[in-house]
Image (cartoon, rainbow, N blue to C red; front, side, top):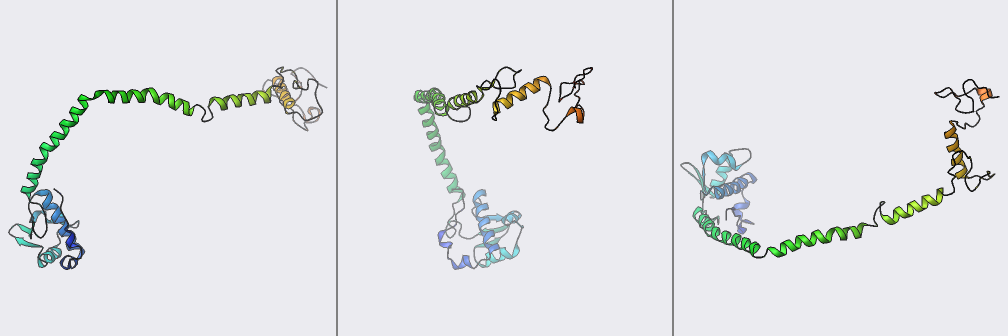
Length: 236
């Protein structure tokens, strides 16, 4: 009831269509302002500046007056036919509507409170059902999803175990358990065993490096990182 109305017959109305855009905007703004303020169509002069974003528009005001949509009064303007032509509600009608709505709203709120007080059980049971059911069902649904799932973790662990089962646990051996005495064929497990042994001994295998020709590669403690040369010890 507080909203301003735009009558359907304005669509295609010659009088409305002949208005400029600025004048039509002032008219609609005047309807909204009067409805919200309860003035029944009266717009005091001091408030006409709110009817357009750019402030007072005397040309638009005169245009509305010539169209017979409002008229000048002592203290501003008054829209013509507030309840008849413009189909708006009076301030008295709005107040009666509010008075009638108050008991209806109170009755509705009272019914809502009574319903909650009389039937607390289902609400508690509903929360309990969510509390009891959701974790288990979610756990069941997501147990085998993602990289951390039990099935994938087991399969990943088994695959890793199968790949590394034949690698020797003896760090002093340059060969894997499948080839304890070595093999002429390429073996990645033997290569890993040699890398572990060299790391343990502090030596590196650098292809093409000959300490007798290229010199030693001393590490921080003075030992050679390539051969077995140690400080105070000569290696032929």
